[in-house]
Length: 270
Ligand code: SAH
Image (tube, rainbow, N blue to C red):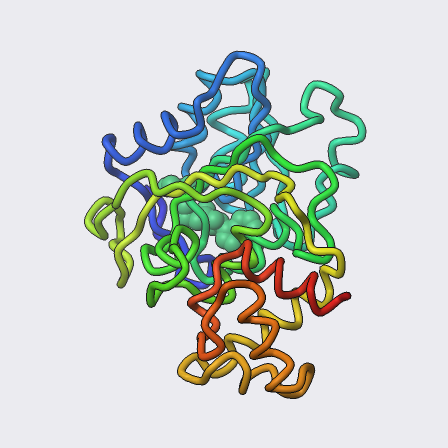
């Protein structure tokens, strides 16, 4: 197995159990076209290739790309794109490959150091959701982040990331993956989640404002929402508004569900 490079967040998955759980979570069919971020040595890639119509894998590490080319170039439903996923215009790269366009699912054991930007590239943001959302996105990520993605309001794990991601997708916990499932083992435990992008109803009438409210609201977690938001809305006015939304005027940001956040934002938008 090639030496893992720290700067690319490389940890090779070696647990057959975890691999099977990831692949099963994607509920692949013979017509699925899958995007994989960071195929690494191709262990997950091979399973995806066996269960889907096409796999497009984006890998930043040149040496791994050479290995993957050697191993998989004769597999007709495989396409490797070399480069940084975050920088890459994937649609443009696929312009000449009609059999690999319209990717509908994502399955990946991602580099943990760029989880936030990866989620944003896959889902978009509250104010600009992805125009062509995936059917589902199965990711192996840091357990702590997985907990934030799947958290319910009123719990400690529920933060700005929870609101941002849950606004754009439903998040399901699939399973825990212990550090020893990898070589080398990462410092942290991991988990698999499945995200299903959807258009939330009712949506925010002013998504930029919702984005701003969430940012400010969670800026100081221990403070009451009316204090965190006082630069944008008068404290007494916010208290009245919270009461009208059946919320306690003393709530903190983490107490509001995604629906509450939307209601608050829409009420402020008038
Ligand atoms: N899927 C493999 C490897 C996971 S490790 C396995 O499960 O064993 C993360 C992988 O992401 C590595 O192959 C690393 O080189 C790659 N990677 C890191 N940053 C990347 C980026 N910005 N764009 C594309 N791939 C990246």
